[in-house]
Length: 114
Length: 111
Image (cartoon, rainbow over all chains, first blue to last red; front, side, top):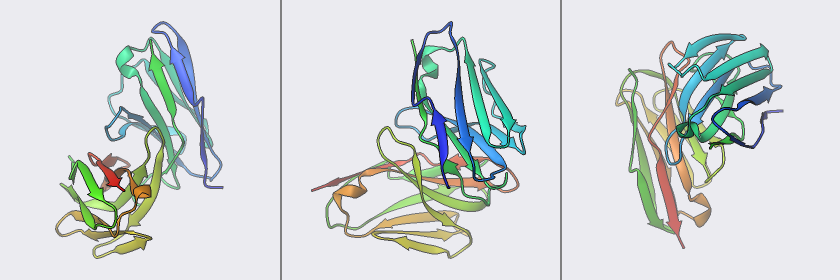
């Protein structure tokens, strides 16, 4: 099974809402990633988890809060977002937290902030 | 800081023609990756290039890597409409977990 799943596929939320994005993989991968992608732009790295510990935070605003409850699951908690946060949020995983390993991407969550 | 640039940014080509997309990166990278993205979809892995001189081919696409020149190419042979998509290369700063994506090349193959 080389699949990364993400839920929900689409999310519309107001600026005062709290919501969460979920990502799951069952490949035994020890690194998981969150990316943000705006239309017609490349994915931008947000967070990296290595062996369930946060290893990279690319200066992401605190209204985005990642969580890795176990080695298969990655969440992104959202609170008080701004309209400019509307984007495609992609989760990825790799066997180990090193650049020598291929990343597998989930289908993404299309987020719209109203 | 690792920077990755692609050119062209946009490519419109006729079916049956050949063309090359270029990916330049600024510092040493452990690997070079190529991805395809269809509109509104996620990224699909195409090639993983592991070392200098690596060449990989799948169908009408062929990717190569020259680590000395810090250059990777994605060559399209006899393009067909189904290849229309955005293509990204990605490099990784040595010793980090940061995958840095290129600017992307939007390819449109005209029938």
